[in-house]
Image 1 (cartoon, helix red, strand yellow):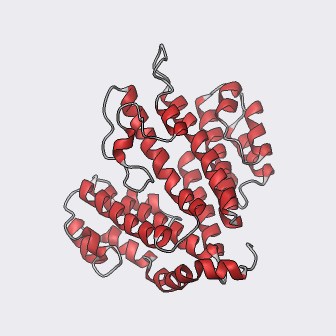
Image 2 (cartoon, helix red, strand yellow; image 1 turned 90 degrees about the horizontal axis):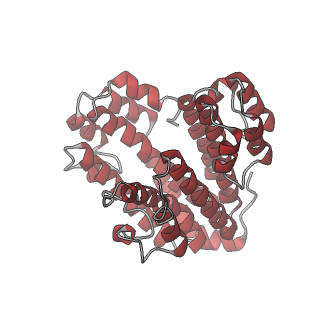
Image 3 (cartoon, one colour; image 1 turned 135 degrees about the vertical axis):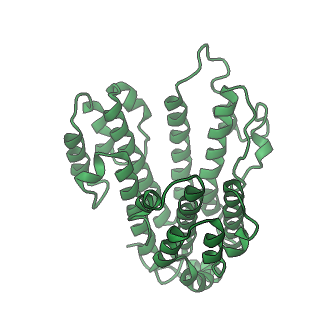
Length: 330
């Protein structure tokens, strides 16, 4: 799908490719996740994970907050290994750091609107947590502008408007980083993520009965124009008609109608589509693709662990957690 790597790419990514060929075989299996779900408590879950690559991070974890910190630490080490020490291009590093930067911005902006200081920001972004304090004077110009954009507003903005504004900025920055990386896989992945975000927006907007003008203002540029154009005809559209319209754009590949009428089912389908792209990239003989697919796979694995472990600690029963993980485990 992504073509043969060039000699220059083989040299640039050679060290990291060698590492992921070994480490990829150590990622958690479906059987491990099944054992996690069957474990009666955190103590037993830690025992299940003790011999895996995440076991050492969870040794002292006793609470949900401890687990969150442990998982963040495991990703921090992953980033240090593959995004920094491997000497990957700056644009590739940026592509992975950006979602965490904008996630921190989202949390800081919501706290600002409530007159509070943001807490528990992710350590995985490119900027330190204290950069988001006050008026964000040390933030890059675009992020600072987003943080302070409602300071002069007479009325507090709707939460959906806040989310939409940050999402548009984040996906725009991701697309720019993917283009600058000159890695086809990242460019395709950025486009897919934009299309998935827009499809999800359409599904939620139809359910809420939002006006086409409001939906159109929240559509993220850079994806399928046919998919974005559906916003103009959304008023009064039935769920089945919207699903059919999305399918006809072919923007989401193998999606089925049932995946496009419910947000929870859609999210599982979206994860599966991204996972398929990662598996295809992992099979590449060299170059950037297998390295980036491994990092993305580890990120996805961490999200699954959070669902399996923190979900149980939050009081969710096994079957509820299992339902959330269904179709997301490779």
